[in-house]
Amino acid sequence: MSVVNWFRKHVIAIVAALIFFFLLVPNFVVVWMSFNKPSGKYNVKWEKFSLDAWKNPLDDGILHDPLMLSLEIALLATLVATVLGTMIAFAIVRHSFKGRGFVNSVLFLPMAAPEIVMGTTLLALFLNTFGVDFLGFKSILIAHIMFCVSYVVITVKSRLNGMDPMLEKAAQDLYATPWQTFWRVTFPLIAPGIGAAALLSFALSFDDFIITEMTAGSSVTFPYWIWNAVQKGIPPQVNVIGSLMLVITLAGIAVAEVPKWLKTSKAR
Amino acid sequence: MSAPPAAAEAVEELAPGVTDAERRADRRVLRRRATLPYLLLAPGIIWLVAFFIVPMWSIVSTSVETGSTDTGFELSWRWANFGDVWHNWKEQIIRSLEYSVMCTVFCLLLALPLAYFIAFKAGRWKNLLMALVVAPFFTSYLIRTLAWKTILADDGWVVHTMNTLHITPLLSGMGWTYSDNSVLQTPFSVVCGMVYNFLPFTVLPIYTAMEKIDPRLHEAGQDLYASAWATFRKVTFPLALPGIVGGTLLTFIPAVGDYTNAAMLGGPKTRVIGTVIEQQIIGTGGNLPYGAALSVMLMVGTLVITLAYIKRAGTEEIV
Image 1 (tube, each protein chain N blue to C red):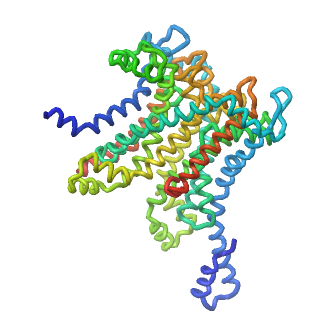
Image 2: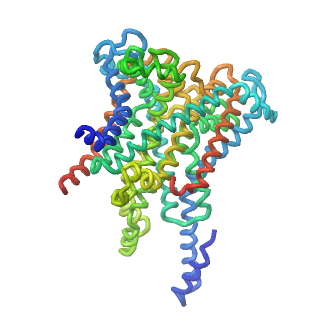
Image 3: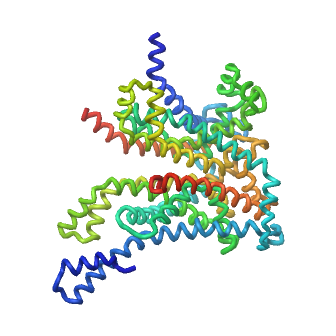
């Protein structure tokens, strides 16, 4: 009977643990398979432990160009989208203006449109106005900035909403100019929100495949390279890069969360 | 865009006896303040209008063109393209709907207990667990999707366990897989990959809605002799409803246009509308207007669903 009771008490925790298992297992498989030495072209079945892929993470330079293109686009898209999105967030939270409903819809729709629709509509625009030669770095960058802006707005907006506007009033009472108020008071306070928005944009852009495939022309980003390689066989080096991305993210989470966690555990 | 009249009056009232020049300067400041929000909004909103709203017109005009890749396409307002694509790819369109509805239902069934656990039972581990929900996002999703090929391989332990538990014959009996000892290249593996990829989109809004619920409301429910299940059904569920609507929308819409799972984990029998659009638009021997017409159908379908939702819940809550 006590087993049944224990189960009833913890059933929700058990279910949650199983769902976490479902969510996280593929990540472990990605890391695990990066140490594989496949005998054929396909790195799907575990065969033999090896560090070969880790010693040669760019697969003799084959992955260099796609990775660099993805990094370049992700950095530029993040920079532009973060600036544009932060400005919009300020307007929405701090100012009154006409056409709020329109602005909200324009921001919401890109998050609610299927990626393939955004990709094909942009492709049609580029083909109809600029022609095939326009496709490549520029068209991918334009597309990535477009779909990142909305996510920046939500992230920065929630940070701004949580900030006490009295702090800015106080700065102004102390004769700070609007410019000084922004850089000395507002910006440092919302910087974590802007940082989170930039990280999110970078991740969205770096990982994007569907919109990129539609607007890339003959340029090949890292995800596009993987897509093309699926039929030919993916080398374990791709898993190495996937594992590195995971390690960097987890380290970032640890840096952000552990101090907070230590603080609360001390307080108790 | 002039300064609001109320503000101008306020200037007169607060500063009587100032010179006209000073008054003009004050009005200029106020006017600048009134234009500031538009200056802040302009670059970003113009970008979104130019590269999200305007392209919708481009795709509609492309969808009624005729021609071929060799001779080029020209605008001939051939609306029959829409009839053609429905006739040719009805099967794939319906299949996309089936897969995305199944994906949304399974995501909801998994997201509710997960969000509930994190919001009410996880205590100070809350943020860490939410970080774990989104952590998979940060490894390229194509690589993670490929990992399911390893997990669901014919000779892997997952399929072995499913065989031992007689789940595989059950799945093939239901038509979700095609044979008793293999699950890859079937609707089952495709939907499994989709649920895996879109689950975080379902969990996030539901968690946000649940986190706002005062836990004392649960205690009140229990004090009134409601069972745990009744408390969930009568208290938690209605309060979390905006998050549930948002989460299912954010899952269904990307799922209906997705073709990566169908291509990587599926086979020739799991082609969806996205697969067809991709082939028609950038594949060799494709027909650009046909791809565009399918894309317009997908766009209008999801737009109708989204607008109906916006009307119900308002965008301010989601954006």
